[in-house]
Each structure stands twice: as structure tokens, then as C-alpha cells.
Length: 476
Image 1 (cartoon, one colour):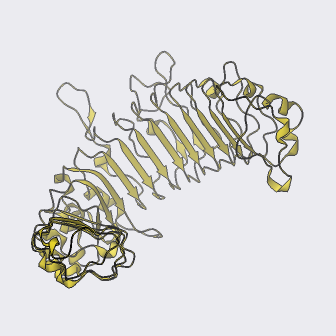
Image 2 (cartoon, rainbow, N blue to C red; image 1 turned 45 degrees about the vertical axis):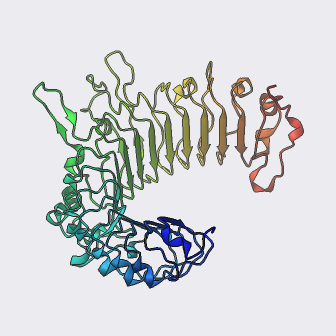
């Protein structure tokens, strides 16, 4: 540091990494103190003398305790203590004295201030932990209507019913763009998850919703709500919603009906153990093979299914009167992982699809026939599909394919002839246990392709002889 301790008294901003910060510093005019990543273990109690301090960041330090005197910084507007793994003592019961606080950012449940509801100026509170007593009641959120950005609410099993959940007043928090609801993992019995989630109704400006470890059998009515104006055309209340992520909702017996969300771009469903079928309800239409003018998921780009252990059937999507598929018209990424009972994936020609990943779907014996005609497909990863016997074949197959990964597909005995004709293919990774896969005609088919990374067999068969390849020369 260039200036002396005496000369530092005129400083307004101070960023410290490797020097000692203690009470001997005369910093009466200091507004900003950034100790992020500094090699310090203690914050001196004399920090309360920094009466004009507006910003304090002690993230990623070795500080073990916050002195109670920190709660005397009545002008403090921003307090950050992220990834403070050594921090054991926080004056939680007195943090509410920081009446000017607008932004408080922390990463551990046990660091949350008590009586946070008194901090009515708060704009940033990324984490709220519901406790078993009044101090940790979800009602503490009621008057914090200036909150913006992201908010995660943990331990929702501590909320007793719908009425208590409604006291969070989430509908009035119109500046929050992303909200994560989390119940504790490992629970097997619940009596009120559905009630609680029904009471946590959000405002229509929300953009991202994530729900973790929810044990209700159905999703809340507010998420599926539609409005019908005077002209008769219905539209979703949540027209700004772009991303929905569902993890560990293992008691849900049907997928949420989200096909009507006109701006939804990302949909992820993980660990929904009771889902057996993806059908017309998912597409948001009545039973039947036609869509009646409805275009489900018109903006969806990324679709993920994972750890759906009961999923057996995925029904073909609806078609319009001309026989063309109208669902997933913008889909770019499709990932299906750990769906061990799924037998087929019925997607017709999706010219927009760029990435396909199918992993650990043991009952899947063939891929949809139209796959070869997906003109925009750039990356395919297929693994752990023990009954898959062949890859799709056809004219003009995979004209944009750049990467192909195949692993743990023991029934696959050969590669398609067209692989050697794919001029866009630059990376091929194949891991199999059968030596004959890489013999004879298969080798001649692959010879123009440069193979990267995995040039070996499972089971200790040995390294693949690279001399069998005639790698394509680099483009000058």
C-alpha cells in the first residue's frame, strides 16, 4: 500500500488483500471497505468507528467471528460475507439494527440474520431460511417488497399451511426475477407441501422458478393459470417465465402443464419418480392426435429429463391438420439421462435441434428414425443404452454433425457407413468392450475421421492402434 496509516485517514475506498487490517488505521471518512479474499482471521471490534461506512465485503476470508460492534454501522448499505467457511459467530439477533442495509449477501443457512423483516430497505436478500420459531417465520418476508433479483427460500417444511405461506406476500415482490423454493431432502412423509406451495403464489413478472424436494402430488393452480380477456384469446399469467427447473418432486404423478408458456426457453425435470408417461397433457391439448391450432412450447430451446425411474412411455407429439409436428418448434438441446425404462423417444424432424444427449436409458433399443435428417444437429452423446443395436441411417445424414460420443452401448456392433462421409465431423469418441467393433470394415469406414481422447477399450483389451487411421489433414 502506497500511503501511511496516518495518510490513510482521507481514504474513501480501501481494498485489502495481503496487509494487516486493525484498529490502528485512521479511516474516519471511509465509505467502502473490501476485504474479499484477504488473509485475515479477525475483524477488529473498532470497525464500529467507521461511522460513514457504506460497503463492507469480507467474503472468502478466514474470519471466525463478526464482532457485535458491526451492528453499530448504521449507515452500512451493503454487507457481503460469501464463502466464509471459518465464520462461526454472527450477531444474528442484532443485525436488524443495520437500518440502512439494502444488500446483504451470504451463502450459509446459519448466517442468516434474525428479524430480517425489520430491514425494510432491503433490495438484495438471495437466501431466506425458514426457522421453527417466530424469528425465522416466513412472515418476515411480508414487508420486504423492495427485494429484487434472486431469492431462495429454504426449509419450507417449517411452514405450517397455506395461510402462513401467504404471509410471505410474494405476489407484491414484483422486482424479484428468479425464485427457488426448497424443502429439505430426505423427507418421506409430508402433510402440507401442496398447501404451502399453493400459498406461495408469485407475481406475473417472474422469469425463473426452481422447485426442490417438493412432495406434493400436483403443482399449484397459480402456475397453470390462464387469463381470458374480452376478445376470447387466452394467455398465461406468467408470460415472462423463461425457465422452470424441478428437482426431486418424487411424489408428483403428472407433469406440470406448461406448454402454454409463450416465452419458456428452459425446462428441466429431475427425479420425478412417479411419472410413467409423457402424453397429451404435457403438450397442453385434449386427447387426440391433432393440435387444433395450438402450438405447445413455442419458444422452448432446452429440454432436460433426468432420473425418471418410472418413465416408460413418451407418446408422439400432436400434429396440425397438415400432418406436421407443431411442438418444440425452437428446440436446440434435448438431454435424457437415467430413464432406465424408457423404450422410445418420439421426436419427428426437428430442424432446430443442435445437441442430443441420451445416457443410461437401458431399455432404449432404437432411436427415432427421423434423427438422421436433423440438419442442425452438431453434437450427439449416447451412452449406457445397453439394448441399442444401431444408429439411424439414411440419405444426407447429420450434415452439420461435429461431435459424436458413444460409450457403454454393448449391443452396438458397427458404425454407419456415412460416418466417413461427414465432412463436418471433427471429434469422434467411442468406448466399447468388443474388439470386433474396431476391426475390418468398421476401420475402413472411419479412416478419414480424426479420433480424439478415448482410443481405448473397456475391460483391459488394450489401446486402439492409431496407425489404422488416416487422419484428415488440418485445414490450411
